[in-house]
Length: 273
Image 1 (cartoon, rainbow, N blue to C red):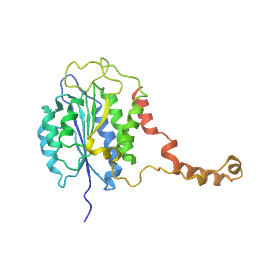
Image 2: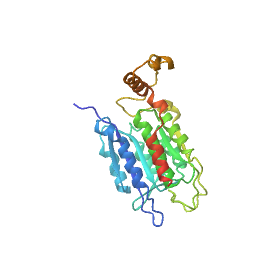
Image 3: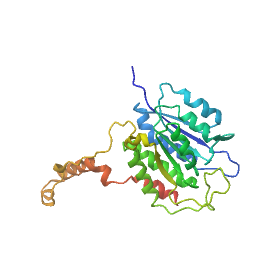
Image 4: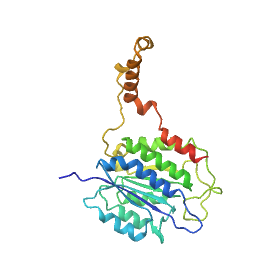
């Protein structure tokens, strides 16, 4: 009998007239590609709703037996009172009540504008951790944040380090003003976006959630083997083949620390052109 796989649910909704979010599709593709390796190795199951409606939201959660959902991710227009779905708003009280019934749920990500007011209700329903926003957020920056955060999770990093890395990466970008790019808001006037609108909120009774990880075949290496490092004089005495073998050992041992996430950096750089 196969073990029960945890489920990562990724949902998206656009559909507000005059406020099309053209990068939602890119966010969906990036998240699917990032989590696909874990999915194909049957470590997790990825389930997506590309155009989430209220009825699909209601029908979605009971679909997975044994309380398997560990992450619920929403990307689209949002605000203090709820999230936008195809055909109208799903109110925050109902969303919290639905998600609170998922006993395996570890994290809710509300990747839209000004979702901080929804955190209290989610925590009261027993949700352990929520990533929410304090202000408007642009479509582009929201997509970039999600891409970086989930890549770190997929590598085997714990929730808090993955979140911190994503925030640090976003801090390298130039702030975007709301009058030049689409924002993921429901309300008409929410002021200017904060430079870093996201924060990680967790239930006081579940501080261990900060160390929670997705199942992974091999997490990031934490211990460095000092025996593989050679002094310069010793390196000079090696043949070319021996130097190549030594370099590969060093990279394999320490790649997570000495090589940045080039794919993320290149993606962010190309989006600016």
